[in-house]
Each structure stands twice: as C-alpha cells, then as structure tokens.
Image 1 (cartoon, rainbow over the protein chains, first blue to last red):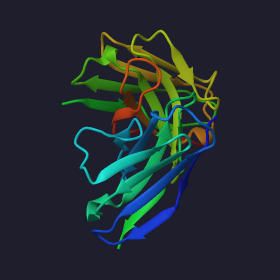
Image 2: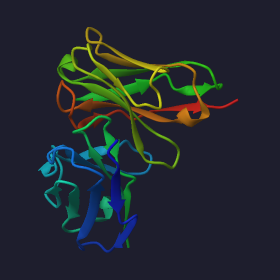
Image 3: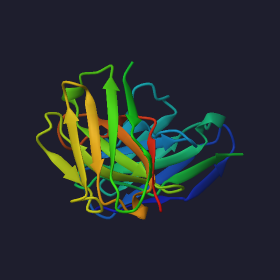
Image 4: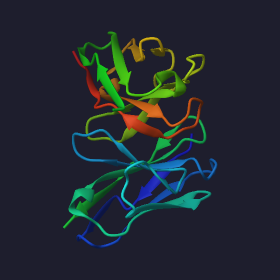
Length: 108
Length: 121
C-alpha cells in the first residue's frame, strides 16, 4: 500500500498570503494519478485538483497543483477566509487508493 | 443537478449487519465507477470499496474484505454497501463517491453528504 505523508500538519496564515501544502508518497504510482480535496467541518470532501495539476470544475484559479514522482504540492496563491479547511491528497494510480492524513489550514 | 444521497446508517451492535444505499441523480450512472469512502470520528479519509461502471468488477480494502459487499443497480441508479460482522472500528461516516472514469483509477469528483454508522453495544 502506498503511504502518503502530508506536511505540515497545520498551517496558520493570514488572508492574502500564499499557502504551500506538501504530499509525499512512499513509492511512485504514476505521476498523474494524484488528487487534492478540501473538507470543511461537517461537510463532505470536495475535489479541487485531479491528475496532479488539473483544477476540477468550479475551482478558483488561486488553487493549483504541481509535482511528479513522489512529491506533490498544492498551492493556494492568495488565501481567502473561506479556504479554512482540512486538505487531503489522494493517489488513485495503484490499488488500494490511499489518502494522506490531511493538512489543516487556519486563517488568522 | 448531479447528486448523490446516502441512506441506511444507524446504530448497530458488534457482529450485526447494516445495508447502506446511495441514490444517484443528474448523470448517466452506468458510465462511472462508484466507491464508498469512510471517515471515523475526528480522523482522515479511508477508501472502503469500489465497483466499476458495468458492475462486473469490485474492489475492497483489506480491512473490510469478506465482510462488506458492494453492488449497484444501474436500472435504478443505486449503489449499495452490505456490511456484515460489523466491528467497533467500522464506526464512521460513510460517503458514496463518483469516480471520474467508468474503470479503475479515477479521482472522486462527486460526493454524497454521508451517513453515520455507529457500531456499539
């Protein structure tokens, strides 16, 4: 099973700042098979990025994904108050699909 | 509107059974693989099971293999998860989710609101 490790555990930033979230994989799984999700309290996850760098429908362009091999990044270019949430990465290239443990983004 | 709505959660004793359903609407159900993903209270996301668009192939996490059965009825746009021999560690919110492709290997682009399953005596 591929283990995804996300860092940092918590990110506390001010509105307008740039957030950089990392996701590292224990082994290669096919670079394009990585997704990022946003989950707010009491809500279902929402797909932000798939294929490592493609934004899902309706996702603002301040969200961007990059990376390949075993190292991936989600960048939120200018934080908005509504971006406060937990963010998960997920690989779907090798069975079983696995998720990272999440990064909590707090807006000061 | 593309939508998934789960039902069937509740409180069940250890060793008991429960059947979850997920009603899909707003899209061609048979064209997409479907999955169940769960989230224990205060924890992260865990993939549980997937079924391909045609229903012929199913996949399970090791933690539920042999106890859970995923199925779908494409004529009724419904996904199900039969859960037997339930354990305390199965306590979680269960989400149904649509994959972006009909075959294995897609991200999950549409999620239901989730249904809570509590396994406790």
